[in-house]
Image 1 (cartoon, rainbow, N blue to C red):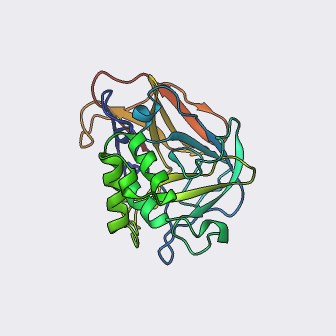
Image 2: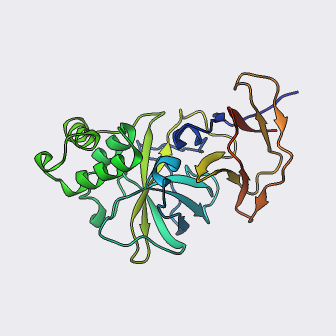
Length: 271
């Protein structure tokens, strides 16, 4: 029997930060150093920072996208989100936004002055806690003098970004920031898009993120013929079993909410 799986298999361990809970297998179409993004407005829902959200999601806040057509490097699922607009209030309700490759050639003029290369450098070289990375992004944007930043991981990230990140371009396997530019006056964000090798372009995207005391497993809908499987041994085992719980399906995303396991748990989509 031939089984096709998503390129990344995701372990879930209860005491690890969310970086261990979130792996993507996006359908990336790289053209001239950029990633392929939809040109239409997409739906955005931001889950605001709450107690311990930094540690549980390894980002500023989880971001869910909707109304994303197929065939692009993003899909209707959850992503790690970061604020790049500290002066504007976070959206309390879903909103619409256009997506831009932060290092692409089609950025609007009002976004081109941002230090996107340095922001991408910070996202790929995080130190300390997630809140430290968010603070580092804001300091990079504000071009704050290093002497005005307290010693520690925030200043270390800012200093490294300025020294090594001026012309930084992520390569395959590293994070690339995608800008969510809102159509209304709400906070602008970026989301993390892990860039896989170019030949990993098939299969729906499986996302796993921990939020508070639950783990959210999601993938695009429709995804006919693909079945969610799990095991508690390793990614190399043959002892995969189908997940029997039926996910919720809103027409664009299938979602399964589970309790964190006592040990490791690995997920994959197969057919």
